[in-house]
Image (cartoon, rainbow, N blue to C red; front, side, top):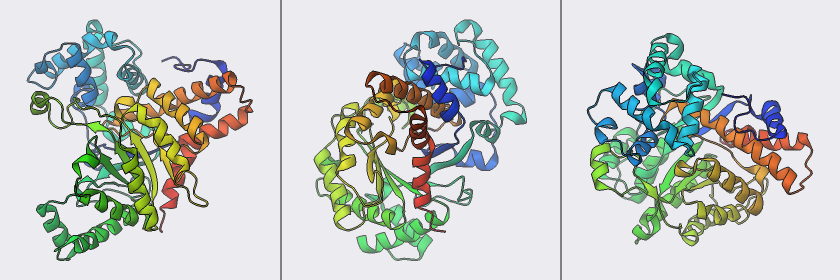
Length: 432
């Protein structure tokens, strides 16, 4: 790909070249396979790595009318790959178009635009590369200059594969809000604590949280889907989340709240494609009053953790940006802040809207920046995608709005957003 890809001005290219492109990656929340990293897994073909489990690509294939048999069905791997390539030129404008080109270029050195005519060439060339040790799971990861990454793990997962420093777990805490009896039984076995009520449940959970801290955990993630507060009529899940947030704060962790997802849509596709099949959508406007109530409850109890909020509905980005000034703490920059554009918003429109909202309603220089939130190891190219858009946006706004920021100050802001601010969240939780 061209060196100035997505960099629209000479100033943007210079900012990217001198400040952004060589910064290490801090990826504080993702869903990559811990077992594949532990075993340094291998990929049988480009289909297995690039298409088999990618709901973003599957969704676009469905929109273009590709039969399900060539998406999640019984067709041969190359046939599925060829069908994706056949529609690829026609998905321009979608971020998958950009990500895919960047993945092929940066990982495999292929700059050709995928199409039906060259599908066989791309497939065979990449599959051949994947047969060599230089393209194992971890060898691919090593190409991205990752300083720290934090895949999710649930409370009862084995944490022995994490090194606690550059590779640490991020707690996925959704199953703790309304715990099933099987989870309580497993926690009792793990901790030796007989769970009989909420108090003893939390006591057992705290034992496990300490294990997570020892494994390097610095982030806890909770998904508050579109109807979260409405469905929580008795307030039990909200109260449990508030109690957990207080425990996260004690350990210096950062709480990640993912809002607005509407996961139940087509029951037909759910039965065909499974829980991560690419058919979820964006919920309506989130209940900001209830969200502030949750944060306020933790704050009143003296335990509001640093909190990053990821709305899936772009119309919620502005009010959540304002929250940056509503919950403050001495000597803690951006105690509560808007997170990076997430899931269906992770494209140039969503990223630029995020930057505009934070700069208009908060303080841009305190933004925690990008994380992949993805299952694919190739998705680390999205840090470069984000950085290029950031450099273009900053250079353009500095000119259009006459900010008159010196080049060096623009560079410092980029370094903070792309690296320093996220790293500071990790260091805050360093209890060693």
